[in-house]
Length: 583
Image (cartoon, rainbow, N blue to C red; front, side, top):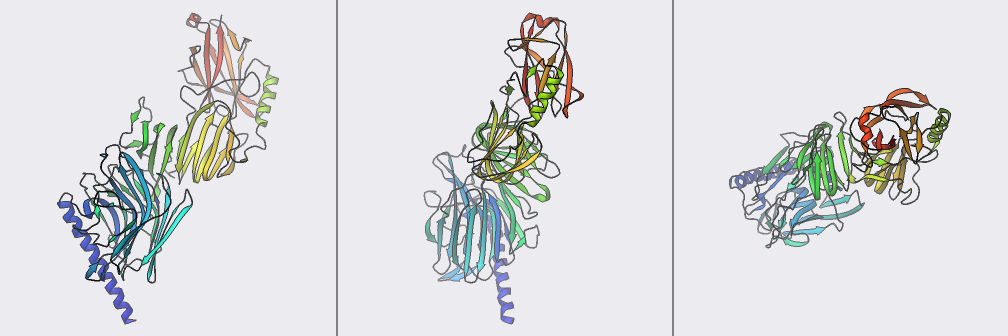
């Protein structure tokens, strides 16, 4: 028993001395304004207590290579390591094992490489071993490092691709401690990152250590660590047990880490941490992305990333963007969205985030048939009652995802969006909403409804019509959630060739049977779309259990300048055009 306590005291002493030496080195490195050693750039949390295991979920963050010189390799390591003090051969060592991914730029292109770094103190070597599978921005990686007897076991798994890799190495020593965050990228003499092979084991935290480190970091999106546990306990901020380090790189980029809370923290570069329900961090992944603040009238380019307000509209038609949002209890989540346009809303209490497809910009006009749901009709009220009942009956027995790739998207295509995200994200269209259960998925709004397709993992889709219900859609399957098409009528009026004959100075009633309150949109000369005058229709009883709404519109004398006009009904984000002919 006495011997065991003595070993424990030695282990703690070694750990504390190592961390103190690391802190002293960081101060020297910072005051030097950047140097050629490992301390040129980085930001992480490090532990002071003896550690038996470390586990966490790490989200792959995008790097921005737009401002990196083509000839340079610039980047960082993202993940966690165990380290210790040891003596072997001719003197002391500070061996370490690392699990995570390298993100770096070269020739203007980003690269993401998952792998291990494994020390062998007895042989005085450090081995680089690739995981054998890829990763993309937004992918969640589950990492575990465990000390088990004379071995250290390392594992990493990509939850999106379900690929995993394991490795093991010799014991590092008696008092293993940990560090996690954004760390310097090891490189060879030419600056190329070391991703495989073996090099001599060196003092990692020394000014003259080799292998070299590159200039880094490349500008990067916030790196989110979640469910972080040390020796089985959830990581929380405690000054007596952990400490943070941050310093300037030779490129002048500043890197910070937020305080751990509820087992989570973020390593961030030039952006501030996102604020729950108020702001989010948006960083370009590829291509060009734009954003417009709530109530704004002009889109701005996300050139290097920025912090934008909750409720912003984001246009990723020609690019990809990584979004990082704050959650309750100091946690965060991140996801990548692309090939679409959407408005992002985060609940200020729960943190739940919804990407709402607007139903298109100028293309959100849905044609009206001459019968059935959505028809402009001069039918009698009994016929309207029957038609509404028919519309309510549509879709019974639907909503179950069918074979691979089915059902197909229906109707005129409006807006669509791809997403690679995990957490509390939801995409919402006119016919339904899909909540993430861990997946990469596609959402498309059409005039007939909303189409969801799952590429990886699972979605939970809430279908709105003919009644609200939930369907779980698995990988390789899809679901079409139909719209509840409104029943629209104009009276008293006659029709010729699909246009409804009205007269100058006449008053006409527009009636809509729909579950939600519709809006009247002012007339425009055909073939232009209706615009302006977004007036709500008034409640007017119900037909077949579905609310009925109406409004009176007036054909003013100035409409006689042109014969053909279009007025509109906006319902659930879609615009239905009613064609008029003035005589």
